[in-house]
Length: 186
Image 1 (cartoon, rainbow, N blue to C red):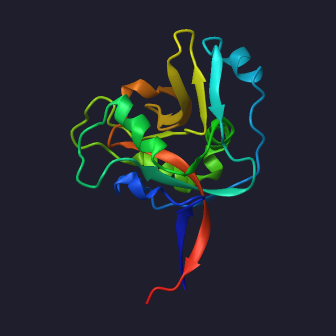
Image 2: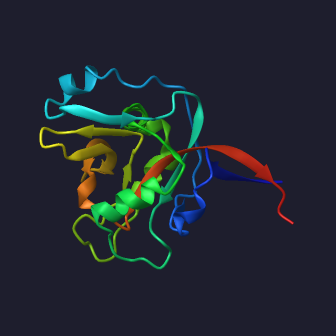
Image 3: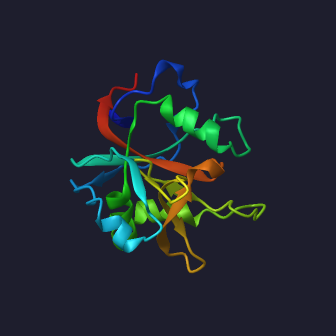
């Protein structure tokens, strides 16, 4: 018997085979409350509003997915990134999950390991990162941002913010909530 991580809800049929598992990990995440809307602007004064917070509050498994087809080697632009994400029915992790992983990074070696990838061509922005699309915040110009985890030059994880109009790069992943579905390999 084998197990495979599936998104909490199956991707829509018109997802064109670009929404796929790309991380090979499944991390059990505890039930976490969403941040109170007043909390984030107090920490990050540039946040002026919230578009949505649909991140899970129950125990779930984190998997890393991509919105790039297997044959796509170049980044996609922000509008295409938004279209592809909207074409799925997945549940995405949010700020509280990113915060837990950064603050407890020594407790999640399987997650930290994805950031150890070395980039062959050392292209700017080629280092691995993970977007947490369950929370979208807005700045004063109504630009959209989501929490992001990346790695610093000392190989430590840090939480930042992805400006979603910049698009999605091949080195990126998306934190997707799922459940472990057993199946028999025959």
